[in-house]
Length: 238
Image (cartoon, rainbow, N blue to C red; front, side, top):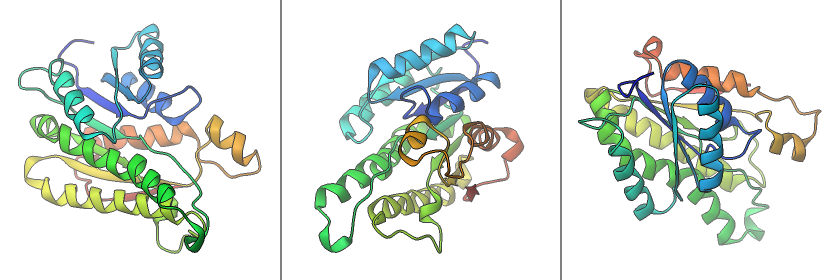
């Protein structure tokens, strides 16, 4: 792998046993240089160390992706390693999280604000910051929505999460339309529960899960030339 290898920025890569580590590994196996982003610098570094130990090219950065100034600084730092002009082939917006909100009538503003911040604001700020570098590479953006944001889903007591993930779909569709002439593609995955350590711990073994490897395969395809005619789509998994 060389410094000319395409760069994939993967946000929310986080702890072991989660989705990000498998997505980063699969993308690295296709020849991409991985830039791992997490709120925790130690976690981002650990995932990058794992990739380097396996023979891949990876770097890490810490960033609170819901903080506008931190994201702007992150983009400047990554631009320094992304060639001239700076180019990013893929942005994978995994950063986010699930939380129950309870009934609307009994809810708190903090629950709503948290879900919007970690799921929608993070995706928006990362997209806006990296679009110039994505345009230079005619790259691809993959967003993570949820089956809870699709028509017919039962969103009782989890409406804040579902609303934030619905916003991710709207963001994706806007980017897909606005960036057609630039060559940047945008698509979203809408999985049911993914088999992560956190989900298995909270939901048990009787839940029907989407395997992390299947999610990673879908991300890899959406970031590849094989899907170059695909943009503005929501793909349900599970």
